[in-house]
Image 1 (cartoon, rainbow, N blue to C red):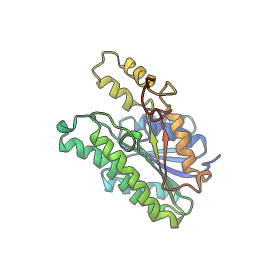
Image 2 (cartoon, rainbow, N blue to C red):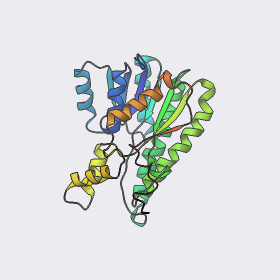
Image 3 (tube, rainbow, N blue to C red):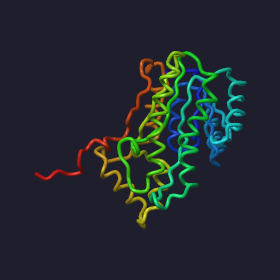
Image 4 (cartoon, rainbow, N blue to C red):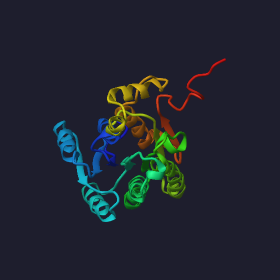
Length: 260
């Protein structure tokens, strides 16, 4: 198994993309510690342990360096090192730019950017040769954007600069840093966007999104997990400072339709 006995920390792993990553990592033999402040953390850990997996959960707000360090210390006490860090935790609260308060702006910046910064700084001292960091960016910000996404798009684009800069610094230590750029994946975040829309039928919103994707569907959290597992594994040993799109081709069309 490609991740056998690798010690991995996954932020935001209690649900959504993070849970997909956790499940795939466990399938490949990793030992997982989930850092999350969701109320679903305990039930997720219980469910995974009942399935026979080696997984721990720590209630952590990645905006809080003290909470991060206390949790990292517990991981190190148990395993002695960390092989993989997945900076997956992220938020998206869509508001028009002129209605975006400083609090909403900082909410995105503090979790999506500073959270990845804080986690990486806390984990890197315990990561050695063969270590890997995987940052969860997005096609939003770097490639596309919609109305109401200024704060979200800004932070997700910034993660690509963070990925490249950090990769350049830690490459001599044998540590790789890469980013994933998901398009639409069927997650609670997408479901929330659909429910918050003006439509009376959230399912129709998801169906409308799917129609605009060349593959005519949203991705699954397990498909995203497979890409993260590859980047975390020794199979990706010559890849660093790069970003990888997984979007079913949604950013592929030059236009939605072309008349001739």
